[in-house]
Image 1 (cartoon, one colour):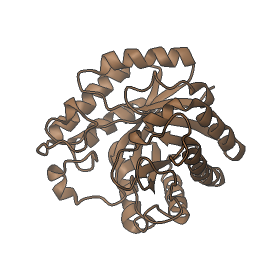
Image 2 (tube, helix red, strand yellow):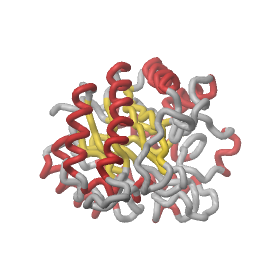
Image 3 (cartoon, one colour):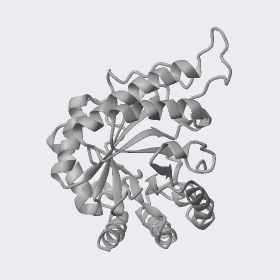
Image 4 (cartoon, helix red, strand yellow):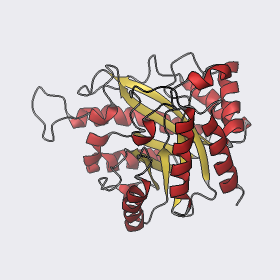
Length: 316
């Protein structure tokens, strides 16, 4: 396939938006500043829906705290007004705080135990709802899952889900596997684009890119990083996926990480871009940026690093 026609200079916006926080002037200003400060040409509009635990099967996407359809449509329309291409990214999370990678059930059905079939039935209803919304609003890309590591082995269910999604959504489909999982997914042929979370240690990029390249060449599919980034705190460059790491605010380390990541990826023409993590719908005050320890680049040195890189890539 010819997708993408241009470099994906993207940033993830809104995660994990809570009902009532989108559709206002501060959220619009956040989106505008995202584009201005990073040079982004793409936006991943990300939002979560909850299931109670990693071992329950009902995804409660129609109720709070999930943002409403009207808020999502507002975000898509706002992104379009700013000239951004749009990826819609519904994400399932656990209400008890367990990371979604641990959602898991027995491989064989057991009476009185929760089952993969029950979970995928709920997940299919969840994803089809937003696939229809993505089609109705003309989203350029739909991400049908994010870092559900234990579910990755259920190839038959994923293929069935994708087949149902294609009945209602005519755009491009990707799945965002977790870091180190690119070569574990066996159903890449069912999606249009391979994507993953690129939270690799600062000095480990070359080794990991060699591993991922083998997967991309074998599958013959486009590839980009659906997530990548680093918190602005000391120690995060060595373990950028750990959002709980206890470190002092350090925007210089975040900027250094971005330089290392971009340098490692620059010569890999099979990498078609990034959707960097992340940019909230409600920003902290710029004057407090130096004290912020999160992934957001707003007001930090890393924003300039990203903008320089993105501007160079999108002007080619």
